[in-house]
Length: 152
Image (cartoon, helix red, strand yellow):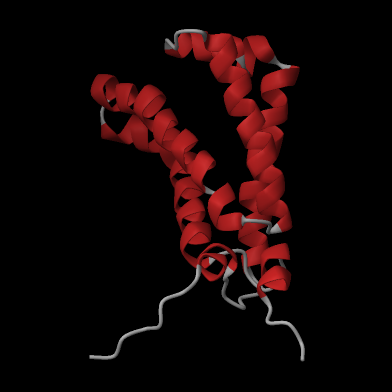
């Protein structure tokens, strides 16, 4: 049985594949979260507090701005490829909460096909976040630069 050497914390957090195309995934995920977070501040009645109130959150103002702030910060980190694995966790949690609070009720009330239609973008974003958590930021990222071995 071949045992892989244990990776240190820095390698587990910053380590990444050398796949150049991962930048496209980071741009899609990062820009969507970044812009959605900003819109929670710009259009609070529609996408911020009002939306969270409609869904049924207690203290919707707090949760709207809390979520929006995480979307902005994590979106920016993902775009840069900075602490990408860690920065992908809060948006993943946001996607899980969005599924439970908005998509599950559609499934229960209208069935699988209407829910699948409404869930298509969320599903893609969730899988792309999983990709980033598993494989990291890719070659063209801050993580890749930080994790490079120092030159002797």
